Image (cartoon, rainbow, N blue to C red; front, top):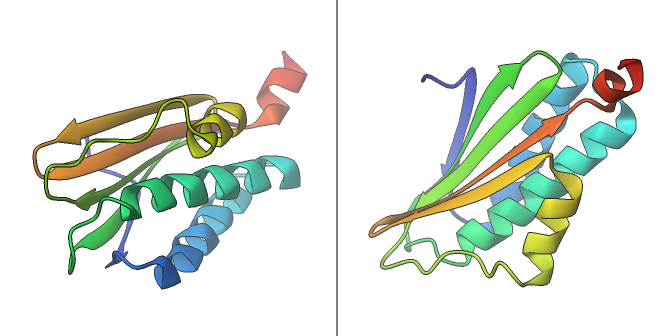
Length: 127
């Protein structure tokens, strides 16, 4: 499945702000509430931090955005050398679980990926 949008930047913490800004812009364009936009920005920031902790030097940080009806799924990944994956008991993972609708991680021998999705709260408010 092809992403609807993709941002690829050097895997350095200085570029996380760009990913956060792209995330907020996409969510705002889909008419997410301000609270939903902020939750998504925070979740993406935490996912980026966890991925960057394992990123190989010189790697790219990639954020792929899959847009649905009042839902955004974001896959944050980077190449890594023997990654161990996120600490599922750690604070950062708990932030993800709290702010996102769905969260998962995938660890391959040379890549780490965190997937998260956030649904607009206007969807549940209308149900």
